[in-house]
Image (tube, rainbow, N blue to C red):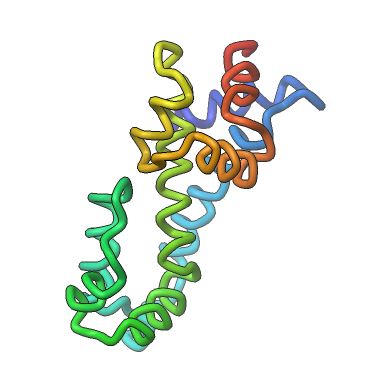
Length: 154
């Protein structure tokens, strides 16, 4: 945590040129962590174990999303009930969750200068570099190449 806070402080010193992604992600993670610690433990709000199994499956294999029927079978729920419950407990659709996982992995991989954007796209589960670039830009506001250039300047 200390290293993350130091990086954030260094980035904030860049003033108007600060990379908002570098600053936003750790703050979001920190905020979620604090929220989990201070929220009252209400048994009715507990995440059902079936949803935890689905999330773990998605975390383990976000590169190739299992079909919704397979996830529904894993959770022993109908497809629509799984989607509703997932959104209710994780404040995200299943596809939004997977996209966030992929983009976070891509963000980390962009620090590996020996990897080309096409290789990163494939590594995080996109067969098409154009879809990957489009989603990355939608998520972070810049193309993967521009994101890498900005990181290398710092």
